[in-house]
Image (cartoon, rainbow, N blue to C red; front, side, top):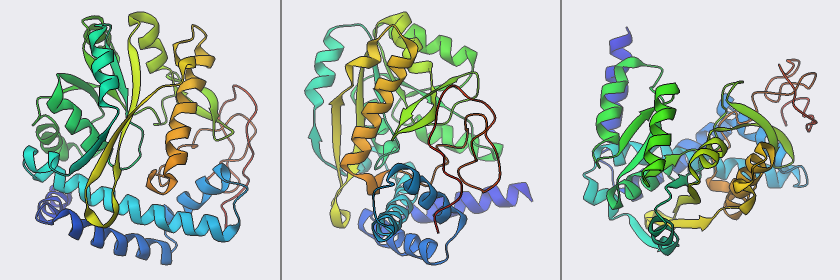
Length: 316
């Protein structure tokens, strides 16, 4: 049964890989709209996140943003499939505009190592693929839950020569070594880390479990940090690759100040194009002690490192 599921998923990926970018976007818009109309679990998570992060929007405004987010995230899922299947040159041809590339050049000249933070905005898979073709880069890689998919995913993500580093102690040691040698590391900064790997810091006014890894890497290696994303252009026209400076607080010796600076940079990037952020992810699934679970009424958080915004139930 497991092999059947894996084969079905691989078959769907290969089928999606035959689409053009414009076709993928058209299909994604339809799929996202259906997810919205059916009020699926994915839709409810999106609405809960937006209710927490944009409390001042009217219900109508949040609903409009939620619908657009579901459409954009559906496009992202199809894009990931086609970028895995397309030749590298064809993937790179979808990048039509580049903003801030000189920031990378300047950082690399310092030979202190460079951390590229790629939040879940637009298509982070394309952002990583593009960067890996420009210089040697290592990226954290968390194996999929379906082990049968791991060989395929490893193969397609290494087609540009990018080094995949496991999300364990051995992998973290490897990241330290790469940065010490002046190399480049790519990290998704807005994932929910383990209890040991995270600390609560503000994100959209909510005390959010946030990874300590980036701050620890900076502390030990003095690496420079930039934030990047591949923003989707209208009507299947391609992408604009954006590179921006990070909030200087990320370089603070104080852990909480550093992590807060990272979250502030991610939030600023999200606010520029909120419909292309992956609001479908349970970013706030860990809650401080005594506060209601964000996504399902009645469940309580496990631990606390400070105050938080209480969201008692899903938005209706």
